[in-house]
Image (cartoon, rainbow, N blue to C red; front, side, top):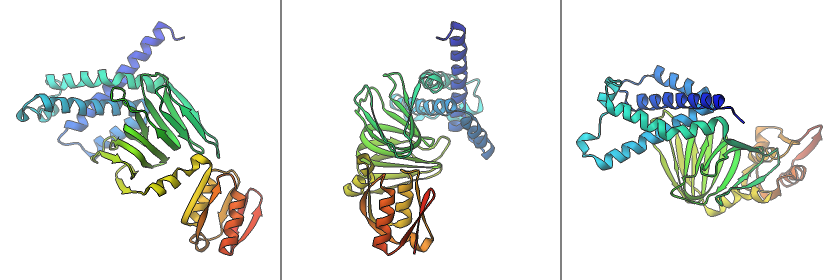
Length: 328
């Protein structure tokens, strides 16, 4: 157990981080001359630790919430204190109040970032179903890592790597929040798939709605995703398209240990199979890789897949040490 001194030191550090996050949010939100150098400095601060990122996300959310509340309570002419606050930050009572509000609302998130997450991971080829105390469920696909807030009152998940299917029990009084690739995903009663790649995030909506926040420090707009939407998000863009129920079902076939391909290029099918197996398949050249394949295969039957693909497409398989080569 932590001593009182250690606890006090931790709380002091958490408060300091939250206050810094609050100042960054207010600067970014209200500055009339926010520069490239300012953004670079913010990015450096965010990348210094996960605690910084989560503190900023909470502070930014608190700022937006406080602004919405102010808009409901005040006439339109009183809703824009930004110019005064940005020019005279230490003289503005509204600015000080905003910092206080953001710091209080965000402190718990910073503490969670430092000590209160449990980590779960799956090996290559593995899957794991996690049942939460609120009735929600997470299913991790191959080679995936998530962190789950330990406190039952805090429904927060961080997807560090891989692919995770969420079946969320909605509770308007206790938001369910997912953080992945610098994005915040807020559940609004949902079943959805999160596929995290370095620099790229894909969200497939099976049922319900989620709110997808823009990247921290970005001018991009938030997005409301509904059933059938597939969002591909990067650091600067969010592209949304519609998918069919059959396509979404195929995308989730890994939950049954199966991969389904419909007119899929051999290169794409091989790349998908290689995610689930230490024994790899290699396509000899781009011409072979462009050939299309159809079928349903067990995720672990990679050698059978290589043999069937070669037979159907009139190719040859050369089985070598550690991998199989598909060639003409």
